[in-house]
Image 1 (cartoon, helix red, strand yellow):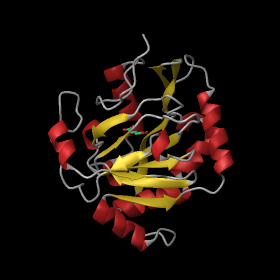
Image 2 (cartoon, protein in one colour):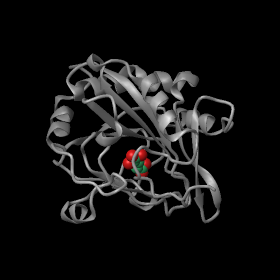
Image 3 (cartoon, protein in one colour):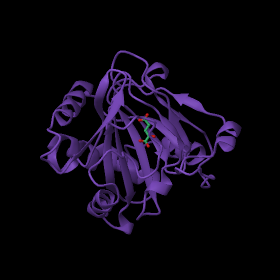
Length: 247
Ligand SMILES: O=C(O)CCC(=O)C(=O)O
């Protein structure tokens, strides 16, 4: 394990299925990089911008596949403390599998209760995290997780989210994450989030890492996702996003 990753953090992750760490000190720089990506044009790149319809009109809700085109975000997510923490939590060297920005701008929708594992088609061992770009608080739709419930896949409904009777039986805990902190969670940790009811954005980066021993599969993931969803409105390979599609 890297000396920069605390054994207590690994233990918390193994026991609870999540752990909160400090990931970056230059909050303003990461906010600027994410604003740069958000300003990229819709059509003429290989990145994937997604819009949602809100009461005030269409707005950006997600960008995927930006790491090849932004050197600073590539360095943040594929080297240094982030990669070291992913490797420590997986217990073996990690590699980036996919990455997204969820913008959750004011009025942006939340996410239904789900586990991520069913959406990851090629890899068995993976870990994700939410790198808070802005403070993620209860009022602007921070994540809620279920602690210590990451051993099994739970029964799902017709869109791949956790069945409502199971949701009602679980204890959901909001985890507020300040800008500069990262919430790491196991791909079987149940999680959900509410809408952003506040006036300011709740932007977050979501890199997912897999065990390098299973291969560097990022390009294959995006090829398959484009094939399955095209460049259209659907945001996810499961129906967890509660946002309205833009016609
Ligand atoms: O950003 C959020 O509020 C939740 C995101 C999430 O669970 C997902 O993208 O799968």
